[in-house]
Image 1 (cartoon, rainbow, N blue to C red):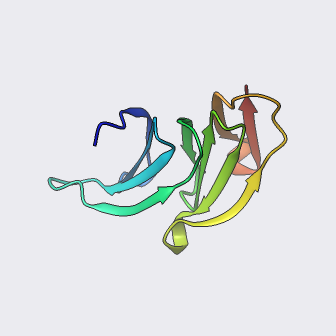
Image 2: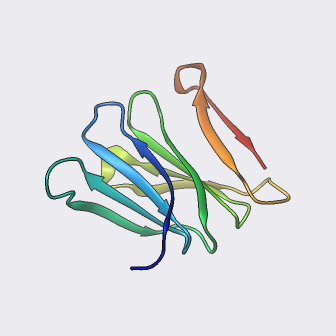
Length: 107
């Protein structure tokens, strides 16, 4: 409560929506009347600025003010796959490209 959403992205199949907030949390909701929470992840130490699903919907990327990009396995209950920590400042956007073979980010 009170965290404030910063970014949202609907999964390619239209079944889930990933929401990042100011507190660094990533929530995955099942789309439907109840918006049931499928997963709650304390993903970042600062606000989540961007989220994206891979084109096949199997991976979710989150980017944050904490300079990190996290990749989560959407096919396995959104477990953390890896963390990318090469940015020198906040990561303001993250997007899958080249049919999911590349991950683009900016900060």
